[in-house]
Amino acid sequence: MKPEPHFAAFPMANPPSYSRWLATGSTLLALVGGGGVLLRPFFEPRVTALLAAGVLLAWFLALLVCTLSFRLNRHTAQCYREETQQVSQAWWAQHRRQVALVESVLIGAAGTTDLHWRRVLAGKGSPPSVQEESGGQAIRLLQVFGADLVERERQLARQLATTWQQQRKPAALPALQCYWQGSPAGWSAFVQQMAQECPDVQLPEHPEPWQGMASLDAIIERLHGAPAEARILCAGCQSSASSRDARLPAGEAAVLWLLGTQGGARFTCGERFAAEQDDLAEVALRAVRQAELEKQAEACVAFSQPEVTQLGELGWPLNQHQQDAYWGELEGLQAMVVQTLAACHAEQHASPCAWLASDPDHTLALGVVQPDDASS
Image 1 (cartoon, rainbow, N blue to C red):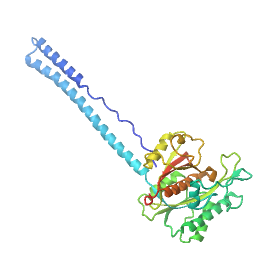
Image 2: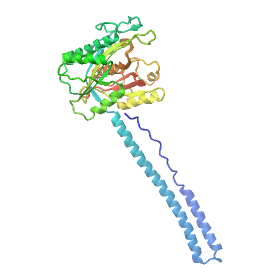
Image 3: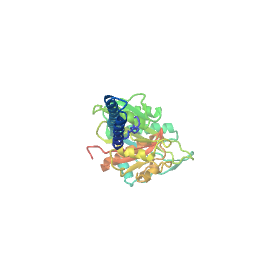
Image 4: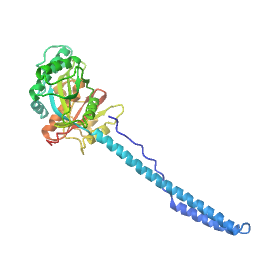
């Protein structure tokens, strides 16, 4: 997505001072009249009259040029304003394009179904226990075994495929593309398990790597104008290594999206904030404008961002559905998790839900998920 266009102000010409022009004209007229009288002994009356007419004509032409220049400047400014408005409107129309979350699966230590996540969002579910590992603290799934992180990710991938089959019973999947967040070994395990669970689902050997909001941008562009049955599969698994120096315990999760043009909560591409070059207040306002809301959404699913504290001051309810204690450190999967939870909240309450997480290439990413048109 290209950045929002900004245009310099058009240089506006000052309007002619007609009082000065009239004063100048009156002075010239007086000088011409007086000069004609004084020069009458030296020049013929016809020559004197021509000189006077020439001076007055020059004054009139100068006034005419000044007036036309001013009117032309105003006309050009109006054309410039209309053209920049058209460019800005076209950018916003593209920036507000959406995709639908047709199906989703979210697996974490606190649950595996929508019912579990609705309880978490309602504040009824207790955070999972934190385990002590040799490297530090961690939040782990009890149904995943072993200390090797690659093997744990393989197990998460297989569980993701099985849970999707149990929850949604996917039929043949004419996916335009597949994206994966995680290791190649995890994708291979996911493909193998899907071949057993749903032989009709054909998945590529090498998926597109998930790159956060940049990938979501590309997906929205790809699905814009696509047939109603078009689908794009996005999935990922993460099992983070524990560390004594980490701010959060190591976490692990698996998530799956089946995106289409309609039929579920609606995602936009969201906004990204880079601390070294962006103003957070402007980015937050742009996220609200992107969702076509008059004010911030009343709910926000978020991971804490200690380096950014101004959003709370801007009215974002960051502490309402904070997810640190339920997931731990998820690295590149963080945004997909909170977006899935925000979609669950939006569908349950039929109202927009904001989300906030880290992004691979920026300080953080944020946005708003809208409920499905049919349910709102």
